[in-house]
Length: 479
Image (cartoon, rainbow, N blue to C red):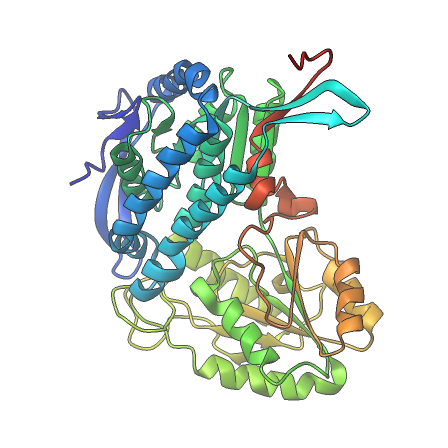
């Protein structure tokens, strides 16, 4: 049994040196499901010191040695995936079937993908044929602070931790204090896999405390953060004095451009994608832009699709959506739905309040606004809940302009059976990712955005390179 009040530092579970305690609340029941310790400066310093001591030896290990440990970890993860899913479900409200599959299994799939990239990666390369005595060396950047969110906990933890380990970095993980239980299980798997002491360390804490302590720490060489754009900006400022590398994966307000020639499932697919994970995904297609000649039909199709979306407790089996993660998040979503109504958007599904029979728990009605324009707050702010805005457009050019008219640039979507048009639009959309006609990105594709959606890329070789420095050496001896 993992003690939720302890931290994992220097290869052992230890009691906190300072700080306080915090309740973890099950969003389906509003009841406390665990109590964690919130670390203080002494805990942060201890974790960073352990990572710093371990870095010299770990960064010099062979690729084969790291691969062996990572493969051992993967086997352990796969054997405990149900346990991981249970932790995710209770901490952040993902329905148990989804928690075990999409949520927990994202950790194992990303680990598999990064192992594959590590196997292929060349850490030492000749510059070119004309410079045989010049070498390009890829070296681990150093001690990394990894700060992860609550909405897809293992997706983000694995993309950061496994990539950093593969690169030869040491690290301190600070998971979201709202959903820390899955990371406790993850840390126990790391311990079971036999990684050397100090390579991986984990402490719980909030952003103001441990988060700020890590991002400003003189012995931290890199920060990798996933979360809100507001927090990402603060982290960048906090890290600026030490000029450490900062990789950010932030918010989104994805446009899903649906043309009149889209396939018959395009609208319903967009609705289900928007509501997946109860809308708590930064890459959700939350703005559905529809060609005007198809708009009324699309609204009817979206309404029919939303009627099939059931809401229920996370502990229940099925394909329903669960609660949002917290009371704070619930109140924020309700506030934005109210703003949308006040702005004159037409509610065709859902609206304010909780679904009938779910008065306890942070449950939100799946909501669709029609007749939205892109100047409305509901179309500009990231709601992070099951709320879809439908916006009509007349021309291809107008659709592109609306899609790009946002501070965000994470993921956009295009639905048309005209492949030339789809490709043409994909090139003009200002986002790090574009998905077309229901085709998901393959494992190993880079995840990340433009503008206020962040910088850097996670997954695949790009995720590995984020944690590496590039060294140029001339006069290399080939003897």
